[in-house]
Picture 1 (cartoon, helix red, strand yellow):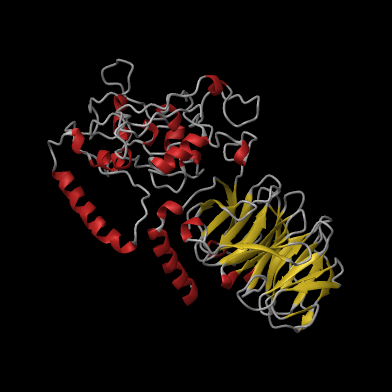
Picture 2: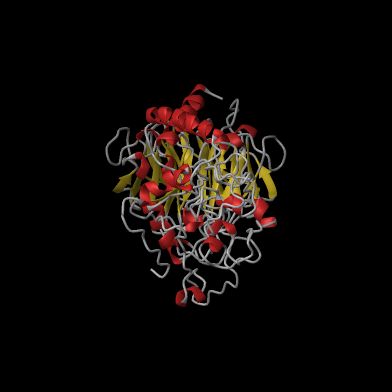
Length: 549
């Protein structure tokens, strides 16, 4: 890894520690690719583009080729850019596809844009080395509008140029600087259905928007980090509703903004697991709103679903994005006011089928039925296509708060406040005492552990009264040895400066050691209760959770 990548990684890790609550999630649909030179393998994937049929085009930089895949990630064919000037190497960067399936690729070394037909056969090239009209010093991003015009960003001369489909120069705009309409390393760009142009201005840490004539409209990215400040924007895409997506290579994240540049969500962390990134680079969004990201040093493409629960409703049109029976509006409000992502898996409550990570689906803890254990409310019908089960309009789930502590059961690791974690009382394994199911592997990234989707927890009822132990306050199975010892706190997402985390960690380690020695602890002293009531105690009366809002 280069020195720059190493420094960037360290920077990200510190930024993530300072702002863990800023991390959001989009449900991962699938990934494809691995490191190598074979078909479907990559060595530093860069630009990503989509055609009208949903086929995926990837610039495979170090393998000196462009690969085409179908919408499911199955390899179709590959081709290489043409060496026209006996250059020692070719360095393809950006890729775009027009309405006829023609493919445009920028070559950073030869200073060309090359055009290929839908089968990868060379058609023409345009551009020469220089700073004049139609010339390039560092052609990087490329985009095509609905009329077939081609836009190219030059990260060396700090300008954008527009050409017709045959490569004839039309106009250019931009210059070096930090003011509006000026650039410092413009890399990627995209064009929306109205012809507006969006530019990822990397070293100014901005996205700038221009109209179809190149006139400046607005910019964003210079607000506080938790609201959307960039530290390395290198990819930009726009969906059919005008939402803007940005890949930040140093923050290791993807961010979504509305058409005015206001933050909507953020997802991704540094790493190699599914849904994590090691330098996200190119980004493209299909007609259904699915997000395609090239993950450079994980050597793969990751695709994230827009319709997370696959019920046909997306975005603001889906009132229950995970079909757990709890409206997104309520889960989002509770995330702001009570607990946001209590299990620390990076998936926000409204997309998480098991928000507190106890192995009991949210739908069950909210008072619904889930006989098949998949985390989705049973008998789902949605005739009005609003994403919320029709029967819940007349009879919303009760979303109980069994111990009346202001934290609803689906966010509460100890719903009955008996000092024994819900996961143990439900028949799960929690040997590390963190209040969450030990086997938390979640390959489908829906927030519910794969193990309980296959084999749901039995929801033990020791006294056979029809009320499961985790709601009854008996503590009968709590800690495994029936001594009522407190469980360790569930991970929370409270933001704090890094230096403040050190004494907190030391204190928590000391408390955990003391907790292991505990043999006679009363339920009110449970650290899981202390943490979870910290926010709820702001009011002397617990909130009422109305799912009909």
